[in-house]
Image 1 (cartoon, rainbow, N blue to C red):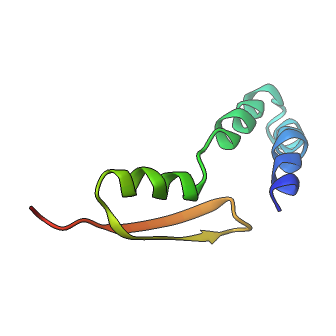
Image 2 (cartoon, rainbow, N blue to C red):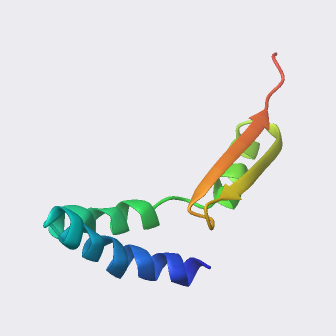
Length: 75
């Protein structure tokens, strides 16, 4: 699914920006900002390193949105 999302971010979103808002360049930043997000696995790794446990996530909207959760005991 990742290649499809990347393709959409590179081509479809700027094209829609050009059609709808008549401003393609304002929508090209979305590619770099969206594709720069770290993976849920990497976030879980970071959280684990910070002492969190029961870490999980759920991908939504074809993997473009992620809901993460974790717990940390009070010390």
